[in-house]
Amino acid sequence: MPDKTIESVLKKHRQRLISLPSVVGIAQGEFESKPCIKVYVVRKTRELLRQIPSNLEGYMVCVEESGEFQALGT
Image (cartoon, rainbow, N blue to C red; front, side):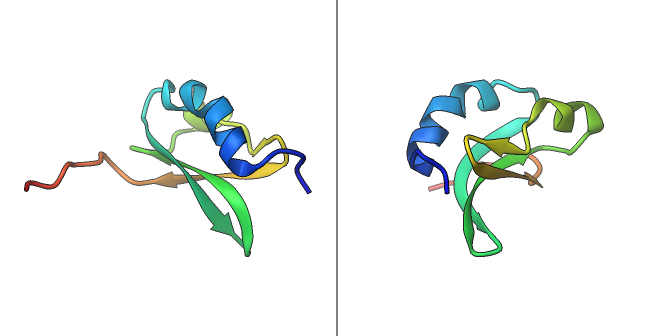
């Protein structure tokens, strides 16, 4: 069990993760009924996956290919 809350871990690592090329979003999620950190990317590449850790302070990191995010019109 991680020592810190997932919210505090997300806050601590958000800027570094979001600054990676092709990363378009970071969120709290769930994997196999456990909290995880989701990293949304335009496209998964080997180079990018090498830069994203599989675990951050005890929380699994899941990388999901989402494509570009588009704002919806109002």
